[in-house]
Image 1 (cartoon, rainbow, N blue to C red):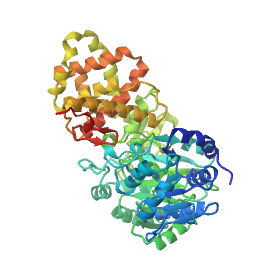
Image 2 (image 1 turned 135 degrees about the vertical axis):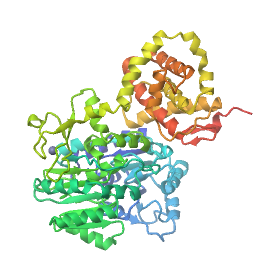
Image 3 (image 1 turned 60 degrees about the vertical axis):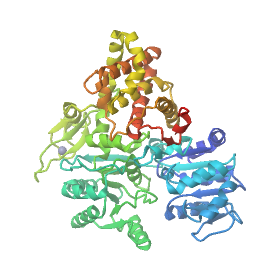
Image 4 (image 1 turned 90 degrees about the horizontal axis):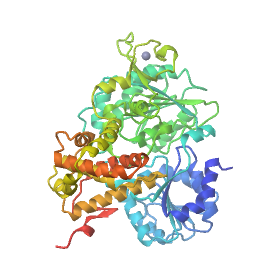
Length: 611
Ligand SMILES: [Zn+2]
């Protein structure tokens, strides 16, 4: 099979990639052909060498085995395997938990370790931690540890558990838009409705996402399924060659209700969950693939490792704080197939208005609290489109009352349809989402940005520097937890580099370096930063305004730090410093800092002064 353009590019670059990196992620969208790439890399660069391929699911193992066994001598480990590794084979396939002794024996011998669905790799977790440590300690110097994924972010709430701590670099191989141009994927077309009566306030998110036990009753109580159904019945007329859909639900109660409603509308539908026996599941999915089953309703099983290229409608009924989950689910519908022109994404979960279209997702240092704040707003991405540089992409929310007394609630782009009439109900009864949002007075990142860049130089110019210059020690020593967060931000703004970073891993390296310096300062000066439940931008704004919560000494000292840094850098550098400083302050706020800290990049014990 001839390689796709992006695959060939990576093959060409591979020798220089491994010169620079030992542990890295190759990132490419779902359906791009990562398995083929892996197989090709093995063939070209590891002829006669020893290779370990790991993934967490049996289904994926089987796919990999199929892709690799024609060209290579493969052995799939079973649970009961023992004995030395690589006896009469070159490629060992396994999950991270199988036949641990064989794996332990294989690691020091291996020239290449590939981990599929590498966003599962946790530098702290059970499965991969041992393997990572083994590789670091006993792996061959010239060996590589390569992760494959479409979405390089961990989904847990633990900041110590981030992917970049397990890998040195994330290499962007291909993006969705390029693959659409190449005809590998089809264009996603979003149809979004805002579900007014979905109430998620007060749900505890400390696990990193909405717990389904709380989420599902809220969904069933709301009109989410109504919106999904009415949109679906319209959109199924607009796809070719015929509608085949995948529905993503939060749990079995939502899924069963949804299934009932789809069947009631006369559409053939089935359900698969993690509990569906594997044989029955295969049979159902087969029926979906050949078109006997139009709608496949699922709970947690379709997001990874499942693929039906004929699927041309995705219905998303699962509000989430995870961009990964959002990206994965939508990615399931984008594979091209004969006669398929597009995939309609029906989103009634506010994921689109929160994270934006999947082809434009950016991956960054993730925090579920930040996602939560974005989610609570539910128009985060939409708001950014208006506040961004162009300031032109406004979105409208249709408030037209339908005959059944509910509102249309479709969200669409302004200046796209004649007279801005709603393309769904044909009326004009829309409000400008941004204008409505702006009135609710909550502080967005964009507003803090403006405040910071307007205010700091002004206050700094009027300050008597000699008074505040020497108050750093006092400011820190007497700081309240909120003031600590403010000071962390100011210090981060000073410390972090304003250079352009070319990749996400560069960005992360630069940010961590500054964070480490601040931690060092804190530990050396016996200052403990108390862990905060959430990172609140208002604290920083309050300091800039020398407001109520951040007192004069702390506010002035912080502004002095920022103002000095401002003078030494041009505006572009300050902009980059600012963006990273916010992230660093957030990490310090939610993780805290103490003399007991032992993070992968910072061991406090090293900086403790001798007693
Ligand atoms: Zn409408």
